[in-house]
Length: 290
Image: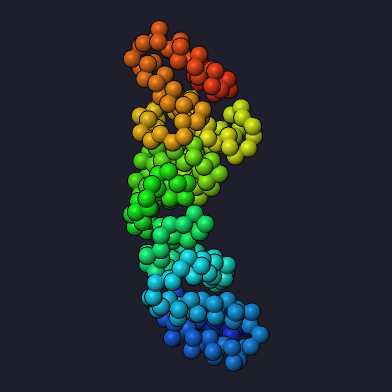
């Protein structure tokens, strides 16, 4: 009985009532109960985080567009640095779902701001991804001029496509991103948490003969074909980027796989020599399965 009384003490009940109101997105009810908690238990260590979440709900009503990229950045950092940690602490497993409307609202307010390289994370497409609204994120990224030649919007589009349609649909964009910006490719691959992609990454890290830094990932699309020849058709859809050695190697492997399937063995000799000249380690990986 004593334990039951403790579990249902007034501070716990008030705290739970605030949390329940937050989950219902009832800002008025949450504020009223929070004030009762603050008056009776001014040292409660959840008062600060609860207030952050209530403030977020109350300010959510603002619908005016962001005046500039600095205003958007301030709003984004507020969610990342204060609101999200408070939500994870107090709401647990439902925190991401609770935060999604805040990201959606911020994306709507950012709709009129153009892409700027000096504010690379401050664009509606990035916010739609945080809200897990994949189709709208893809639309926002596609509206950026030359998006396929710019690392950030290319990564946003690859992320959205992968989440909408699966990894197969995203392979051409992932290849282009690896050639254009290996570090962004690495960050996106971690964020996607796709089991098949994670497995390939681990095998690549363990077996690829490179310099041991993030730039090695430019060779990842080519190396993938030494392990998964069936991806040749999908990877062949990647658009030309900078015609780097890594890109040329992948296209050469696509050719080699095509020649093998057609039984044109005499033509393989020169192509294989070209691959060996481009990257000996990649050539060795290719020949292991031949």
